[in-house]
View (cartoon, rainbow, N blue to C red):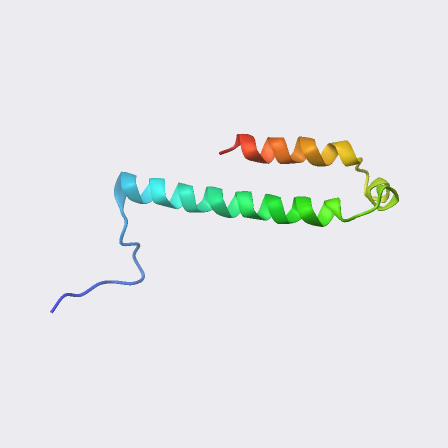
Length: 68
């Protein structure tokens, strides 16, 4: 009978780190997309209240995508 320790990642070493990095990147991209959509729904006045302009949303999106 085989025993697998579920507390230790099955993907160890270089491949495991690559997979972990990929998963983290996708999660970061998804979070940036959700934030961008939420901010895009705000009016210009609401954006100004938090110190942003509509053009800042594009800059933030590009910056988030450059990490991938």
